[in-house]
Length: 179
Image (cartoon, rainbow, N blue to C red; front, side, top):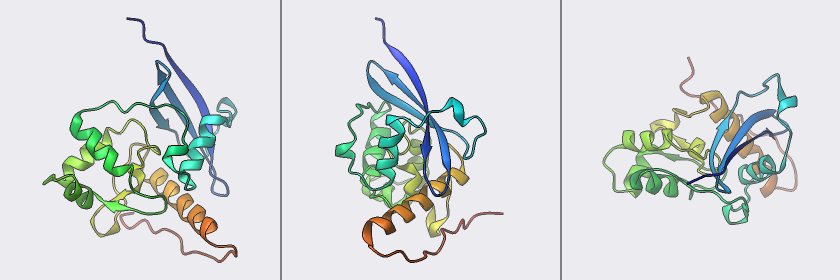
């Protein structure tokens, strides 16, 4: 069986905060994996600002997943897919803890939830950056804690701008477990 595979490189413009290079992997016409690069990467000329990044920015800005027209497929175990589906219900600008997701999934272990999210192949679509540790700590993210903080900060700005006509300053998102 010949499975058509391709990858696309773009950059995710999250102005005013900056850009993140993204690589999207497709198999048989379905998006199956997204990798996020380092913010402010030097070689952004190799990553055009294209249509897929536009849709990902839309999801981070509050667009409903139903309007995400890029076909995707979640590949993982039944437990992983259950955790990912629960995570997909977290609205933009909001967070849940690993323990809250474990409770919803009838799973006794927040660590098992963390392991499932660690294997999330589609960050942003499955917004695992919105899952935080007990006490609000930013823990675990495949692209690193700095990118997790960056995505959450962008969502806070987008959420505020979507809900108010007048602009007022917001408190920055604190990184509570920084050393």
